[in-house]
Length: 115
Image 1 (cartoon, rainbow, N blue to C red):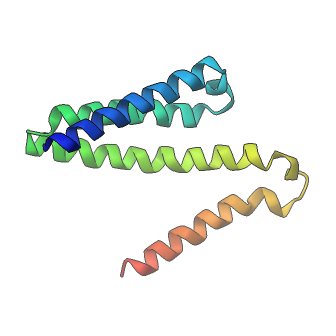
Image 2 (tube, rainbow, N blue to C red):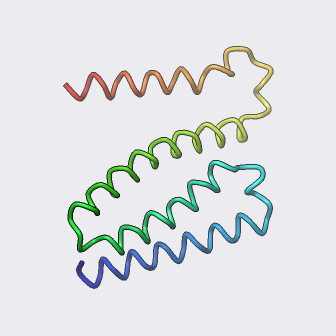
Image 3 (cartoon, helix red, strand yellow):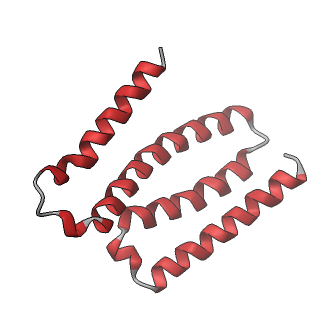
């Protein structure tokens, strides 16, 4: 791994650790548990990527399995933050299904565009 890439990887991990500590100290890990889990997983994933960089097969498997978990955790984070930000609109019936509908639309567009 080039030195610049290694330094950027370490810097992003340090910043992610700072974010996780700040979330924990302010009690946001209770309010946004999926976002906190995403932040912790990001730290573990980055450290694993740095350690496994020289081993092609192990790095390949680790990278793609962590990307799958990133996608799942990312969607759960979006769901959590969407409902937290728009909590005042819960009374509107159609608004409850807006996130799910937009998720289906996004997956449909991605499926159509992939062919």
